[in-house]
Amino acid sequence: MTSRGSVLVTGGGSGLGSATAVLLGELGYDVHVAGRTVENLAAVVATIAGRGGRAHAHELDVRDADACERVVDEVVRLSGRIDVLVNNAGLFRRGSVTQATSEDWNLTIDTNLTGAFYAARAAAVRMREQEPRDGCRGHILNVNSGAGLRGYAVGAAYTASKFGLMGLSDALRQEVSVDLVKVTDVVVATAVRSNLSSRTGVRRLPAESVAQMIAGVLAMPGAAVITRVDLEQLPEG
Ligand SMILES: NC(=O)c1ccc[n+]([C@@H]2O[C@H](COP(=O)([O-])OP(=O)(O)OC[C@H]3O[C@@H](n4cnc5c(N)ncnc54)[C@H](OP(=O)(O)O)[C@@H]3O)[C@@H](O)[C@H]2O)c1
Image (cartoon, rainbow, N blue to C red; front, side, top):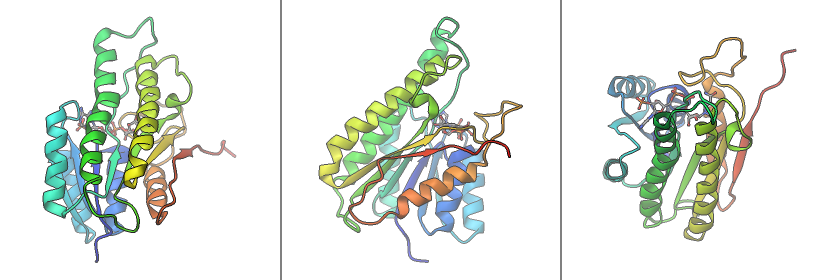
């Protein structure tokens, strides 16, 4: 199968990230999954390889700026270029503004916002150096949440991190569109099955819904940029 380009998925070992990695592997992308739990990454790589795709695992803590640069360099070394970054790694710690611990606040901001910044910066620097492919040098997709659009009282740090990610995306889009790099906010504005979203009593979409949304965004050819997609679900019929 001819490669459709290379894609790095942070948090690619579980949930939305692994579903996205598997689908993009099936579609013919050179897939790179990154995260801290190497066993999860190895399982995703094995699934993609078992379906005839190409995949690589990279141990990564997105809170480490140097490690983000090393992984992006490794993607370029193995695949020749980095076409897509799916900035997906994230976590949720429950706590309102008055209840959140400083530790949970810092962990959430460091992972969901600063980690996304480190990965996006490392990828954007490499993308703007490479030759355009179908009119585009690269594409960064930031996985956001309904909590990036309106406050979620019991997830104060999460809300702040995702509002921040929306701002980071907007600033990045303004900076790199001139370099032919696309930036898309993937807003998951409903509950989707994953480790992060395990509450009972809430109807959740399968993680594959997000994978399909991301594949749809990447299917848009040429100069057209989808700046934001929102995923919601119908009420129970
Ligand atoms: N599920 C939902 O309903 C929902 C809704 C809206 C938005 N989202 C967003 O979707 C994204 C993926 O979450 P998910 O629902 O799929 O949950 P998940 O299954 O818990 O996946 C999160 C992934 O992020 C990785 N990760 C966490 N901290 C990391 C770090 N410091 N460095 C590298 N990787 C790290 C985790 O792997 P390791 O722990 O192995 O590193 C894990 O694979 C998140 O950005 C989340 O905010 C989810």
